[in-house]
Image 1 (cartoon, rainbow, N blue to C red):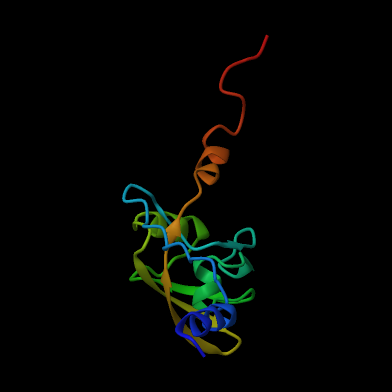
Image 2: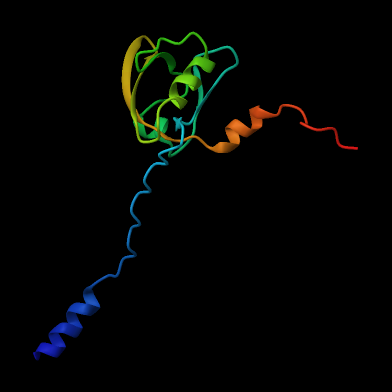
Length: 130
């Protein structure tokens, strides 16, 4: 077998793969975000958004938040305020009660979507529309 035939045969058995883009660097001016929602007046997680930090860390619907970093929150607003004080990419320890067992997770925060802040910024129209 000639060298050219060997190269052609080798190239036919090679499966081309698309390059994987590098992970985006966190926004240095962004605010931290886990990707969870809780029930009204509760610290029990209602929903964990798929493929976001809380999901990747292993948090589940039904987990009751006990501690976020060093904070032992009384309200979800305190959780939001504490998490958004961190920059995206920061790793925060979250302690939850799952059933009758305490569990601790390390969550690498993402960037909080700006829409979440905008929807609460103007609960009513800022200017009257004639």
